[in-house]
Length: 276
Length: 264
Image (tube, rainbow over all chains, first blue to last red; front, side, top):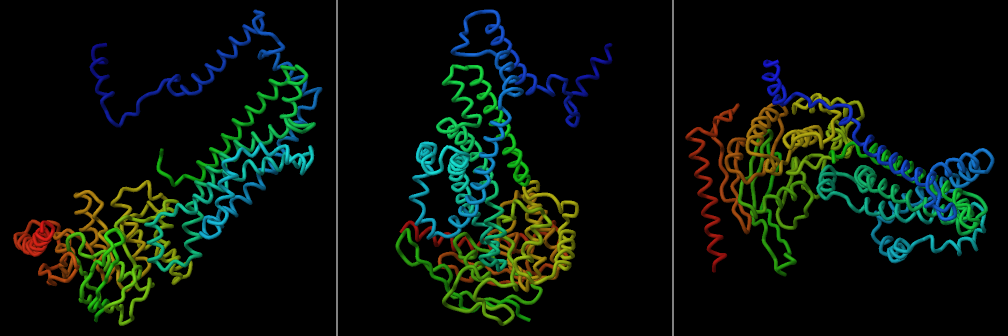
């Protein structure tokens, strides 16, 4: 016993010895984060089931939401709504990504084009694009294309503005080095401007995903007969609070999933960056 | 054979802030022989960086003549390569990719030759095993090795070094100086090395150009009498310290003179 207590501090003092983590320390984020969710949902469910503090008209409870989720999934058209919203988002966002990156590169590279377009871009970037939804419905009707367009319009500007910033943010030292090695304008464009702007573009993608999601939901709420946004709006108008909550939970989960994907993408392309 | 020739080079600047003309370089002349290691030492503001930029073709000049292998310098060329003070490495490229970069831009070699030269010079600067690392994973001294390998791989007639060790800590700097001499002995390049450190200039160079400040002009050019290969212990040799002291006094005179001007 005595020798053991003598030996132990020495092992601890060894700088190379990796500190031992127990199960709790290792999974701390998951345990604390997941635990807090479980506790909150548990308390919520207890209040919902065993008291009459919550009126089903104004709010809902976890078990009711789960039950409604199952009902709309098996009997309702949840899958169709989800496919409708997902498709609109995917199409609108893809068009926004391609056009915003191409245009952003051109605007960032050519100073004169930037000076001409800047007032319009600044105005449109600052304005909430969903405010244009009524106009967009007049243009495209209440079918899928008005939603595709609002997603496009929402996601386009953050990606564009960030791409322009990325192209303009060229390192002066790198530019000097490239010039000294006889780089042509085209070589500077392909070897410095484009790779250097990738992190900026991905920041734009992350912001674009967030506002694009708002775009598709608000678009469907304002004028549609399908989609998750419509499901929420319809649930509210008909006092089906449970249905409304199902839609809301799905939107929240989609937001978390897309943000996670965008972050993964950002990390994948920033491997060369110093650890933050 | 003369590789780099500078004759009566004079450079004016328009200083926007003070709305007046500044004479950065005044009638600078010297030449660098084939395979020679020439160091240029001078206080800050002596125009040594302006001069390097002119030789590199990054800064235009109006008066005087700069030529490499008898050809007048009018812009950047494949006959020169620079080792920068800040390593200026592309952070998204690996070490191998960065060593290739200069060759890639200059389009002088085919793919196979570039690959071969990349490997060769990574080995020469002692970075074997780090080919696939990114610059952010390397220390300052190692980044400067990459900077050096990139310049050597481009196979220049004259290699220009712009205070490459100025940003390193004292110990790393000393070590890199010794390394540079070893690499230089193997690569057999003509080098122009700019520094503000007198002992660095003496330790490395065959000849030293001492410049004075405002306007920058050549104050003295002398041959370094020490034989090669040189050890770092040379810096503690009494003859070395004497020479260093002599150059110090040359530059000190200058700054005292400047100090007087400032108080007038």
